[in-house]
Structure formats: C-alpha cells, structure tokens
Length: 257
Image: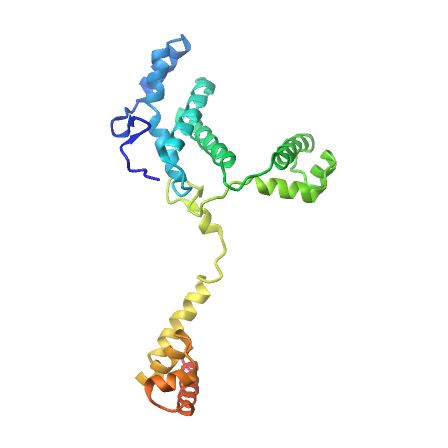
C-alpha cells in the first residue's frame, strides 16, 4: 500500500484544499439551500480527513485507491448526516464515520469469510444486548442474551468473536492531548517486563567477572546451544575440562546475581 503516492483515484493529494471553519460554515449554509457546487467544494475540502484515516489501515495489504474511495463514501455520509446545530467539529463527527465505512469494507472483503448465518446471529445478539441494556440499565451477560434470543450461549460467543476486527497494537486507546496510550501499552509482556530486564542486566554483569575461557564456554553452551562435546572440540580441551570449567563459572556467577 503506497501512502506516499501523490495521485490517488485521479486526485492530486498534494494540491487538496484546506477549509477554514468560516468557509465550512458558509458552505454548509449554501448546501442547506440546495447548492450542489457548495457540496462538491465541501467534499474536496475535507478529503485530507480521508487521507489521514486510511493511514490507520496501511498494514492490511489493501490498495490505497480502494480504501480512499470507501473513505470518501464515509465522508459523504458524514456530510449528509451532520447536524450543524450541535456544538461538535465536523472532523470529530466525520472521522468515526469514515473509519466505520472502511472497517465494514474490510470485514465484508476479508479473505477469512464469516458466514451469513453467523453474522446474523452476531447482529441479533448486539441488538438484544442494546435492548436489555436499556431495560435493565446495565450490560447483560451472555447467558441473558442467549435466553432472550433462544440461542445457545456458545453460538453467540463464537458469532460475536467472528465479526471482531483485528486491532493494531499501535491503535490509540486514550489521548489527553499529550502522549497517546496504545493497545500495546495495555498488553502484558512476560518476556520484556522489568524483572526479566533486571535479570538480564544481572547476568551480563556477572559474566564480566569471568575469565575469557569461562566466558567462551558459557557463551557457546547457553547462548549458542552447543553440547559440552562440541565445545571441547572447538576449543581443543577434553569434555571433562569443559564440564569442570562450566560448573566453576556458574558457581562464580551466582555470587553476583
């Protein structure tokens, strides 16, 4: 996906206009009077929004032209449904609409096809969830949704899971105007946690206390995966000597870990 290309769908992205808030307000007033030229101008003046949104999907292997066209559909829907009386910036309203349109496109065109019956169950479950939430003023359990629909809970869980879009680890989950918090910041990492990091530093520090032959033996044994026999052949000593030096080096390192 080439997001640095200048021309997308015949549109020269380097020359796209940027509208001021005053211009947007004026164009909306003209659009409400039925001015089609104003609508066209407003669409062109907000195509940069579409470009910024499709950047989020640059790892999906989709053609940028296709995503741009789908994003434009979302933009047009946002324009047609935007309520100027609400104290909301147009971009704030439009971006989720554009993202939603692209996600629907990716879901419907995914190589991993979800059957129509499975999608129907998922959408019914979502509707039932909304209904029960409104009735009880709290989110229902899977069991309650299953009872409402007369469907086994396992089927509902499977259906809801099937329609979920993959989420990038770099998807922002919170932003307060400063540094964003991404999904990857919320995921537990057993390999790169502080404890493992400190252990690695401790091991490296302990290794510096060994002589060159001991370092060589431990490196080949535990980092390169060599057997004692292979190490013995490589450095020209007996396997018994390798075993003795290895044990001695490990005992020495324990003093510093």
